Length: 269
Length: 265
Image (cartoon, rainbow over all chains, first blue to last red):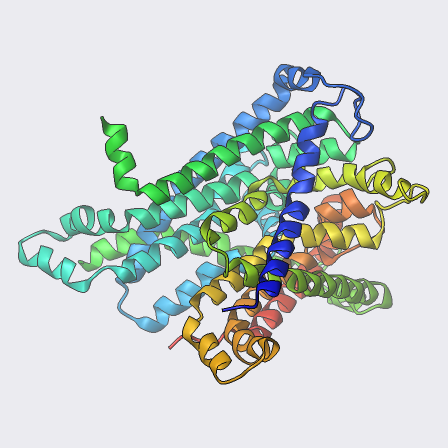
């Protein structure tokens, strides 16, 4: 299909690309072991920074907060987003449905600075205190459209005859919902949950605006620390986070290759 | 699906829609009409069209354009080569993996790499070039931004390439087209939708960057995003901040119109 030469060039380009993408990450990891205390002049191997990281209770609490916010907000967003998507799907008037979907996407396409600023105004007007609650609410708010976007296609994929069959067999609407629709769209729900999780864990801008002075998530904390200069315990943190991410990603890849059912059966044993 | 059931399902979602989508936008627009003292005025908009703010806006747009263009330049070949490899799923995952590393951490890494004694300067010193101040320059800002946004440009283009019917390329080659012509006449038009999606995914966020500007570029680079953040969180001039936000949103709408993807049949 292609001349041998250009294929070789393509491979080279890809390799350069990979190097380019991974150098910063490798840099972080390598220097997390630097006895020198800076991100240059590697003077010796040490685990000091990891020790410092694990004794930094404030940072550990912040990591915990970040994870809790992510899990909670994604769970609530998945719930609201899923039932919203189902409601949207069954909405008869096409015009209304389409404009609602456009509104849904507003929060996704809007730059996060604008979302952050607008939420700040909103919370101030409503008198909600800036802190854990405001961050949680904000994360739920921007995760809902993502869930809707993941669930709606699944609903459209559903064969119409499925619902008809269930109704013919005498199922009341609520059972059609719980026994037929929800199981079918579960992959979409899970995808939505996962995406919401990612967005929440990684969010900086929106959280930055609504976090007030007391509460902090990981991204916001790293920002404040980075502004004060280099601290290798951040490198140590990056290494651990990267390790966890790699585990999750390869776990996902492994599952998608083997099939979720097989893994579920394996886990059930 | 009874009507009551349907509306019970929709209720929480509609509530969210009103409170967190419609009202915040309205609040931003509303706030842009108030100045520091809280008086109703069009002053903010007048101030926006003054040389200082206009210059900042154009510079911000220029940066965003550069970042988007360079990202496209780098991402397009990557997507192309990727769609031709054998283990494309694994490789795609590996390319996307860095984008799951926290944004702040990656930016922080560049603080080290571009630092006075960092990787780049160490490399340059091998050739006898004295340490350069790489941080706090336009170059480092654009470089880091491109680094952050590349996966978002690669993904839609790669998807578009994957959707392309392979037979078309072979047909073109059979008809005697050179590789360049195949690229120009077959591949590029068919992947244009992916390119447009990528542009949208990169251009607007580039305008609103404020964290990278602070950490990498110091206060030398001011984007619309930094201006908004500055007005809201530092000078507490919510009115002006809201005005800039309105402009940013307007630009976003324009970009979406401009990069409108063709609806699929």
